[in-house]
Length: 303
View: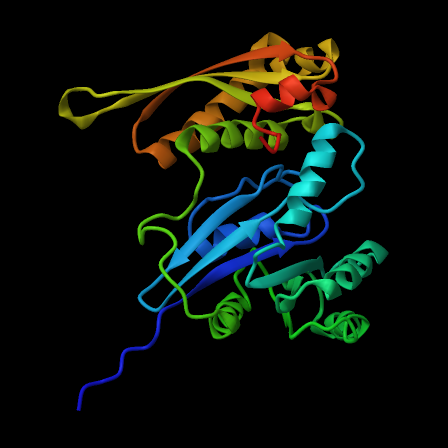
């Protein structure tokens, strides 16, 4: 008697929630590779980013989205629209909340999701930062919002993530292989280079500056060299809002820019598997977050 083969399952899973609740950290942990940049600054993610997890029985396409917030610029409007549209044509919605500080906005998002047809999971993240008894009132506060599962997890340590994947696979429909088995993100190397540079700027700069930073990759070229010791040359411009911010990004005797570039280069070498020559320039573009031409240049428009 031949063993019956399990039907292949696949689908799209949206990760949504307020800024800084851990969506990108969770995505990177679940996929097992760096897909989305991470920093303690809110609104780090600006675009919809796909992370793909494939095994012999399933393919889960995670959709990481910008944190839902009240937009104040055209860039903010784009981020908000991107997050809201990510729930369309989706097979499962995972809403994240921060176990250390659940806010009224979390409950507003939960109630707004009730109209969506897709099944919904609530993920109570940062379990590693609270006492287990603190989770119970959080679960109770969302108990009437129609979530199929409420799962405490830690995206940072991985606690509860295997159980989460098990529940996701159970809820996915039978479907095709949407992406090649060895593909783990839909981003190009140029896009990832831009995001890595921005991540290092976010991690190094003061609180008021990061939201005004954008990165444009001017050139990206890999040079094949004898012995397989290839070199990737990347030239990029970092946009900022104000002349004062430019001076801070460059730093005293260029030390801040050097630190950002050095950290970015190390991460890019790990990503690309080559040596990297990274050249950065700083350009002041006042109000670029409200300028459609600048937003289009940096890839922050629907077209």
